[in-house]
Amino acid sequence: MAILPDLVEIGHINPWRLQHIADTFVQAGMATDNGQLDNFIYNPDVVKEHTKRTLKILAVLAFFSSLMALVLYVAYQSMKRDNNQRKQLAKELHQRTDELALRNHILQIINQGIALPELLDELARQVESLHPEMLCSILILDDNNCLRHGAAHSLPEFYNLAVDGLAIGDGVGSCGTAAYRGERVIVENIQQHPFWTPYRELAQQAGVQSCWSQPIKNNHGKVLGTFAIYHAQPSIPSIIEIELIESYANLAQLGIERTLTDTALLASEQRMALCQQYGGIGTWETDLIHNKQIWSSTTCELLGFPALATPTWEDFLAVIYPEDRQAVIDATDAHIAGGALYDVEYRIIDANQQLRWMRSVGRVDAVNTSYFRGIVHDITDRKAAEEEIKQLAFYDYLTQLPNRRLLNERLQYGINLAQREGKQLAVLMLDLDRFKVVNDSFGHKAGDELLQKVALRIKEQLRKIDTVARLGGDEFVVLLPEIASYVDVERVALAVINVLSQPFQLLENNIANIGTSIGISFYPEHGDNPDILLERADSAMYQAKDQGRGCFYIV
Image 1 (cartoon, one colour):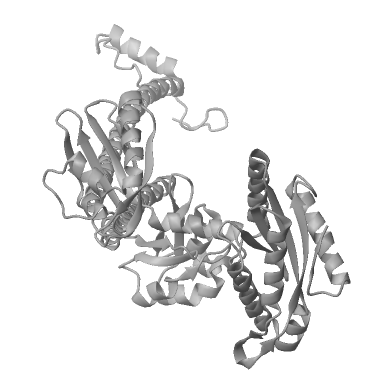
Image 2 (tube, one colour):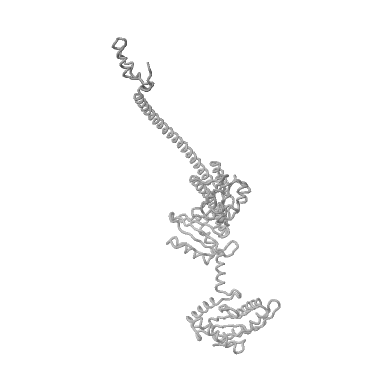
């Protein structure tokens, strides 16, 4: 067989020719038609179709496999996420349980009244036990606005000593600034923050790189101290950590306030005890139904006799000064009968037979009206102070003579009395002669001594009902009430002039020679009120000086 490559492509097969040959063999009985020639010759279209079907099947299988893998992956991730959430929830629950246990533990020891240093140290230890990466520091603000060491057992001792006594201020580290501003201060990196510039080397030696400080405040916003968290590496708190710091600061606040309250209460009780002891305060109770008295030991001591098992009303009345006894009885009866205020002052005769002033205040019980309760206290010192105030208000501090205010009151009283009884009174205005010479020669101390001696000499010339007062400087006034005639007044004036003209022996062997000029006015001839009478007597005194001094002149 010849190959004609130009006409027939090499490898070309004519399928119809092969089919014709096959049909010929079948017709000749040499073969049977069983379709063996089907697909005997390669058909690219058939292969492509088969390949497409196969690829489609594989694609469907791949899709469902991917879908199944995706479902399994999503399920796995969901299970993993749920598992992580459960682990996180379990961790948070455990954390919250620990935090709650910490809080309950601290509250319990607060209620036990544990000392503040031990309380704060326990709080710091508990916090560090829950958070090993944290170093706690608790500082307390004193009355001088300085931070004092409270607790920080994990920080080096040299660091605690350096911080103790630190004055607060803006930019003074984390704690000093937090206490000064009253707000949280977060310093992520101590070595790079301006607040820590003076303390960077100290912090580096202590091995701390960050500091978060929360001010500890009371319910009124007053800063009590700071609660600080340190870390060995630069760090910044999460929201949860900030909440924890605030919670720990609140616990510290409760402990500090409890201690301050206990301290204040103890101080108050001590002050009350001192008041009762030194101020003389006692309690008493009267059973109005059974006429029974219940006195405290202080009351018995105040009233001047040993404690009695069954004191009586008569025991109480027995120690009251007789002139004041009825006033106490009347005040008691008025309160029990009509609810009048029971607040009575009276004198007692103490064990040393001395008069002392007492004040009793009380009331019938509003619920059980059969009991009358109150206190008694010693007001002797108060009365003495009142007398001293009265002395300052009405008497001249140097001579102890009545001053102008008391003189006016007595002069007005004398005018009113003279008017009712138709009598006379006289006003003598005195001005010392040559007093300035004594001051200039011997000094003001000698002048004061001279005025005191002048006051004594004038008083010696007067009756008990008369008054001598000092108006100021070297001016004196004599009030003579209930006079019978001018002659009596002139006799007093001459006696005063005479006694004051005698030499005065002063300290340091100084001798003072003075005199006095006197002006006299009378009621009712020269006026009917204090101002007019004093003014007329003053004018008359200048007339006496003009006449040569050492004499008197009547208006």
